[in-house]
Image (cartoon, rainbow, N blue to C red):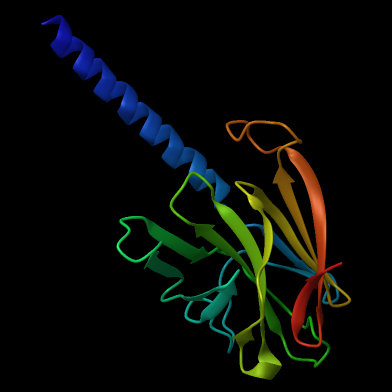
Length: 191
């Protein structure tokens, strides 16, 4: 009887932990606030109508070519592996001219879950002048929160919340930092 109670309690504890992890990961995926300073308006965190389809295209993350369908890509981590890599586009891409051709481009945040405990966030852009093809993706961080995407004079400013150096990943990210990017000859680069 005592062994049966331990099994039941263990199952309940495991279920609570899974629910808490789900809630925690869901909070990490909240849509960022988006501002196009040059137009003086705030763009809502949804997918506006645009000729650029951020949810059904190819992205280059590290050395992987990731093809999204309806905003998600699932792939095997390695041949024969049971580990699934899940890549998705975060709600709320920003649309503004980031390469100086007077066409609205898309600034996209990608969430990459390679099968371990890490949840990696990348920034990429889709340039209208190149038919909506994506540029390279740059790592923003692991298990961070995206707070704000702001575009001003073709500079992409992304405010994130992250952990202080040495803090455990179990600690909620609270330290804000702004990262800056630009397009240089069709390539996304940190500045």
